[in-house]
Image (cartoon, rainbow, N blue to C red; front, top):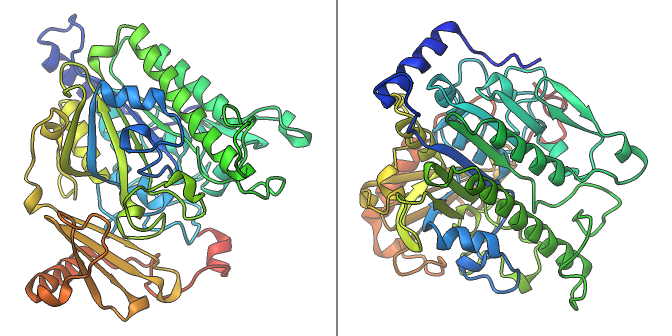
Length: 466
């Protein structure tokens, strides 16, 4: 049984919002449906629309042709859980509840936390999601259906999502047992996720809905039967390439992802929802460093997943909204995952919650501009990894990175003329270095879960999941 928190007061509030938008109770609700599709570890350079030439991504390239392609979009963090937490809470990596993939807590989100889905649900949206949640296991207050989602299907637990032939998938408040995967490989999880995604959209077509497709593809697999690191039913259409098996599998996973984004987009068009649906596609962080160099997974960007250089946090971001987002255009506006909550709240016609780190970027989605030069974006990583802790700030075109590994020396880059972060110009700009250091100090709020420099890996605290 779905026991997501829905009160009578919330229902009344939703009806009032709906009436305010329609002008009368019986008119169709003009507020847009919102679809946010998220890949896992897909690099900036893997897509044809972002310069990739090795893997074919026709559906995602078509989405870019029909919409707006952002070249300066950022994830909330360089790893899975942090990125998802920033997306859901509208708080950046120094404030959000989950700032790293470790320690592996039983839950990150609590009843007191406000999520993007809760804001939309209160505004009258039907909210559904599939895939990798990572913010609260089953039977905890952090599970998706306790955090604003009417429906959720897939993986609640972070590590569970590393298995593509799992023995079960979380299904609202229950489990879908996949007994055929115990002895063999009968049910590939990605196929089941897409089936549920299509069903949710069909069921929700008559009223505003929010759909969050948090796919696990093309993240590596933890299955020991696949020592090359990837699990996929077939390597088509790359089976005949003169590549190593891992490369064929990776390309096939990106191909599957592309095909299913195409299915979702086509269904929305077939249902007559094209003009009133905002579709966004992105990735949770940069590509992984183990991906073969033939793919050039992060393009010109330096670094990979887990890094605070651009290759770890700058992500593809495509927005299609016919008649609103200009088709076939490229935007250099600086936007980030924490901006989605206030932006979607504005689209839903509800009050933007106070004390967020994100801003509404609706003007940018419409092809306009926001005040990029005044934006301050913050990330950190490695809290519980000994001396690996690092911080990064983007302030206008300046990018600063400071890590304990190199003695807290702050590196400075000018992204306007050094996208690949090859030249540290800190010595030439001491005032900028000082200001960025101050911004880093101000952005970080201490959290008992993330005691900088303390290693939790393998500890009792980690294993207990507390």
